[in-house]
Image (cartoon, rainbow, N blue to C red; front, side):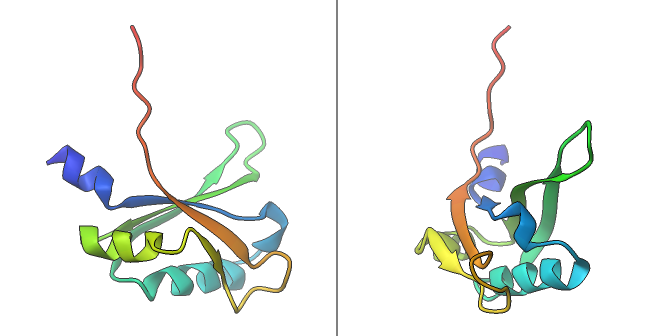
Length: 99
């Protein structure tokens, strides 16, 4: 079951300066919702400075919805201003730890 869960998770790489407030965050979320039902959406933050890192995670309810979002790896979010409206969507790959 875990493998199926990970298949629905995507990583969004965005320009850190492009998403500064809640309205811009909602614009990115709205863009990703056009591919399907989003069940989780989270911006990554630096653990020391609490600044955004330029990555966000999105989880879709269905595997097929994540696949639809991945059909175009480089996307433009029309609600954000250029040049900060370009994003890159990639599948999430969990890192394995070596003991």
